[in-house]
Image (cartoon, rainbow, N blue to C red; front, side):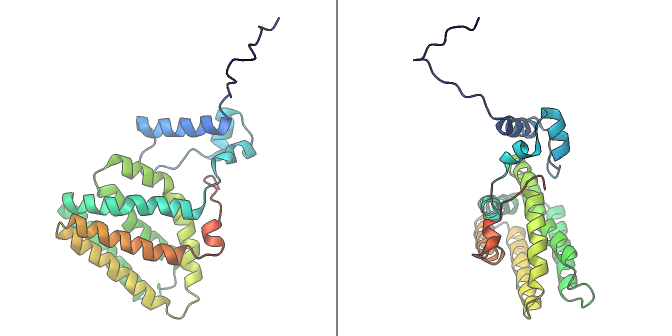
Length: 222
């Protein structure tokens, strides 16, 4: 016999499975089970763990590239400022090595149009800023979004090679990276944060044209 249900009582909604999975992943991050740079559990693993179908799992998505990049624009400039205040010689050496590698790519006829090499090298620079800022929350947050940004970046870089002024554009990008390293080296936290915010806003306008780029729905488990 079913217990009498009071019609005036609150109607409680059971959490959707997608919400439970999202909560589980957040818990992994908080406990430190998921660390910077770690991949999210694969779609197949989560389907087995929670006994759910692929459509249910994908309810966690629905965000856009623009959303993800906006999140990075809110966090990376702050990380650049923190890094300028705390930088070590090792941080500076690694950032400079990254810039030198990018210069080598842009000035090399052989490797200039290697989209994967460009994407990996620029992603490495962004990763360094977030990893070395000394704030675990920023680093973990960046790690979760990293693959989404990397996938989109490689697609955009490949498209830009069709433009005649691509090499000059990449030279400007590298000059902006070098300027940030100089500000970090000088310990100018405010200047580093301001420069990187401007940099990311300018790059964001190129990465996210008003067409499908900004509206593309991200599949975190693609």
